[in-house]
Image (cartoon, rainbow, N blue to C red; front, side):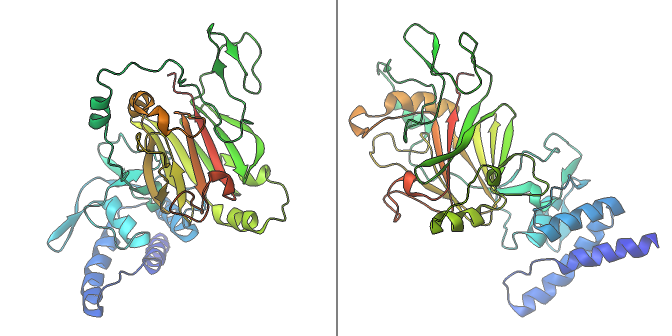
Length: 359
């Protein structure tokens, strides 16, 4: 009975594989090799882990599932070798994945420091996307040589869109003014690393969400979701574009504060669009809006780069308020010179992330 159930789980997982777009002859040959390797790999898993893996693949990440551990050793496929987690991602998520692709764990994955085992849950991984920016830290450092750092550019978060988002700001005497929600006069600034505001067009929806945990999941409506559910703060609307965009948020995204900056993980089925001070060109008036595809992750804010760019940013290039700690993320719809919508406030559903960089 035990072997029969395990065999059934393995067969179900094999049926759920995503075929590669190759010729029939290549598919047939590689399919036999792949099937043998996959079956051999899955036989190392206990029945409980097979069930977890099946739930994750069947729900396409909709159901929260724990890590599925396998020994971190290379698997031989003909003349090629591959890691177990890469093979699982190829079979059940990204069939065109190549060895040159960099995979990055989602913050929910707990095996990043395990030297012996690796997580093979394909929905615990993302494809790392690099910013296509010509500005690098070395170039920005060269530009700061001999510059007197402007004293009037604050690294405190401030809403650059409508001024309706409450933030923490220090006055010239070092006292706290314009306190965030829930703070008492005379109290110290909390240790939160960012605050998140949700917007629909020019209207902010819900209260400011202050984040103390290392990462935050932001999604539309998940039965088992743990994080910020936007459906709980959304109100009925007659605006068609807002209705359609709400339906596309789905699994949403993850914001994570990590050693090298703030990372975004796109878990939805549609692209998200990002504008961040550390992705902008300091000498240009136009904001850089970057598309992050479904299943991809990206470093959207570099703390070290931000401290440099706030001094490099040309003052004559600023058309209005400039906030070096504000990130804007739009669900499904882009904006700017390359898109129909010119301003973020024309996007149906978007986030304003106000970073507290005084670490």
